[in-house]
Image (cartoon, rainbow, N blue to C red):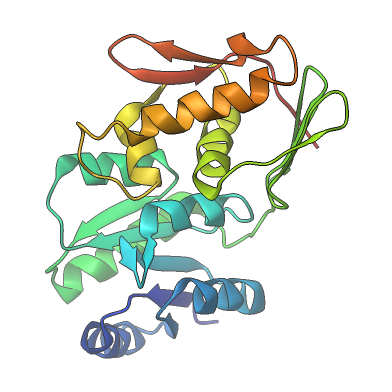
Length: 232
């Protein structure tokens, strides 16, 4: 049976050419040009692997990989025209399985796909548990709903939800600022927007009680979520 690949890129010429290369190599290929079509294909086809461009339409591939990882363990290779080591590191830390820089040869791409498929060993798509509980709080990651211990729904911006998800899923581990920045589509290491996001997130959480300690800064590194998480 042919392995199924979803190729997600918004450059039509690249899509057409790469699709031909992959089909000639014996793969079944479906293409996606934006976030919606990508997630429609994921739910419909249960792919063996996804090739995801780091910028897909108006969306950041870094944000998309986080969303994919919230519902699936399907292998993902990120594609990019950027050569920054920082971008490669961010993609891997957020859950991608490999990273290929454009332009690449057909032989390299096929070799990378085969290597990832061998390493992952299965096309099983296993949903993650997505309701996080901690000290009376409930955070439904899929529904994007944060409920305080007193039952109040805490309204967060999309960026705040994304940052909280990364911190919660990595509770106890310091997440570097550049990883958090890239996840919300920012690449300038001097950008202070992530610090503003954290400040607002802390303020909203602390308004529900004595929870200032939940998100702490780690000197010269980033931020850490300081509470044990139970997923269900």
